[in-house]
Structure formats: structure tokens, C-alpha cells
Length: 319
Image 1 (tube, rainbow, N blue to C red):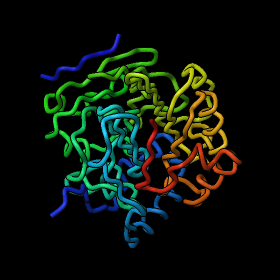
Image 2 (image 1 turned 120 degrees about the vertical axis):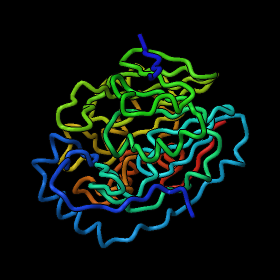
Image 3 (image 1 turned 45 degrees about the vertical axis):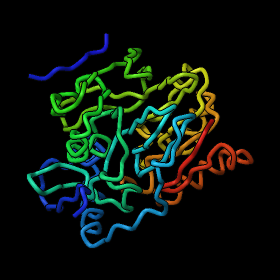
Image 4 (image 1 turned 60 degrees about the horizontal axis):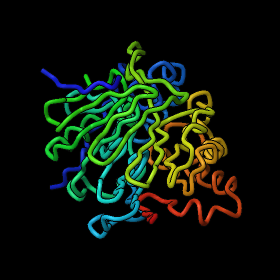
């Protein structure tokens, strides 16, 4: 049974990075793994300190989206803004300049490569925040706190609501695999993927989900983070599949490669695929261009019709 949780200049979330030896595992790749990858982490961290954040290639205009059909824009990493028949959802919102372990005004972690395609104050009214799991590149507390004033509802994975300031949202619901919740006109069902949910090293009890979003006649799949799994076969058809395609080298045991993402989208029988989880943070060793190039190659002749949105800020429309 899903849990309805009731708890006793720009608005960009930008914090300075701080070099320290604690909490390295919080920076998105995950606690247990990053300890063994410390040389890569520190090398990338030092490089990030001197890098500037590039502007987003495109900037969507959700104010022009009508209340019919599916409208979506990739804002960066796994953050997608969607409007489905007038109901607005944002997935895994991350607007911070750095993601990682927060130490007051400081952050130990990874720096953005590209600005989000919209700033927080440019977002329309958000009805639902959909959170896949507690890793810091998906569950960014500064971004989530900045969204509290809008009073959205939140659907999140099992045993993750303690990270939120629950009274500041309209409602927070935790959902586990196979469970379904209702938010306005949308039915949200969580299903199992191959990943893990610990935010720090020992909180391995936290859940991690992919989701099927059903609103009227439209169905959308949000894949969250996953390695190759056959669980997408249960979807039974979708208009849109939002699929992670990056951070697989060398993390293939917990992140799918682009060909596997394409396979899972086909398992879900998705009409259109939106590749995410790439080009925003340097979380792994493949080049920033490689994930998109590989999924387009996997799609072959269908890439133009089935992968129409390919850069941060790109929009798509399905009616």
C-alpha cells in the first residue's frame, strides 16, 4: 500500500564547491561505488572548479503549451517538464550548479556542464514532482526546497520522504514497486528497475522506481535510473518513454548503455523516446556526445520520428 506522508538576482540554486574528504559517495554516482573511484572523482572535481557552465542550447516556452496532448521539454540531466492534458509534472528536478553533499552554503560533488534550459522562476505552475530515487543527481534538496512555495504534490520512492520538508508541499506520497497512487487526473504506478537507492553509504533501505504515468488516454514512462532489465515489458504501450542513456562507463551494472535504453523503450512499446541522464554532469568516462550518438545509431531509420528532442531545452509535442 502506498504511503501518504504527513510530517509532524535568479532563483538558480548555485553553491560553491568545497574540497573535503567526507561524504564523497553523495555525488550522484553513489556512495558504495565512488569510494573505489576516488581518483576519477578528485580529478574531475579539480577540473570542474575551473570550468564555466555552458548555456543551454535551447529554451522552451511552456507558457505556449495548450491544455491538450503531451508537451515535454528536457531541462537537463533527468529533469523533464511535462504537461499532459493540462496537468504539469516535473521529474527529478535539479537546478543546482553543483550536486552532491551540502555543507551549509558549500557543496562537495559534481558541477553542471550546461545550464538548465529554464530557471526556477520560469517554470509554470507545477502540479506534481515525480522523484525516482534519492541519489543527489536526481533528488536535489536545494531545488526541491525552492519549489516548495508552489505547493505541488510529490510522489517519491519508498523510504525517501524523510529527506523532504513534507509540510511544505500539498501532499507527499511514497510508493513502492507495483503500487499505484492518484494525483489529480494522473494515475502513477511504480515498477522495479535495476539500480539502488542509498543516498549515503549505509541507507540501503531506500527505494528506487521507474513510473508509468496515465492521464486520460495518454501514457508516459519515466525510467528513472536503471541497468538493463526486462521490467519495461509490463508497460504495455506508451506514447512517450523518458529513458536514461548515460553514465554507463564503467557503471554498466547499474546504468544502461544507449542500446539497452533503446531496447527497454521498445519493450515498453513507446512511440517516442526522450533520452536523458547525459550531457549535464560528468559522472562517468564516456564522452558527453557518445550516449546520443549511440542511441540514434540504435534507432536507425526511425531516429527522426522516434527521437525528435535531442538537446537540452528541446521540446516535443504529441497529440
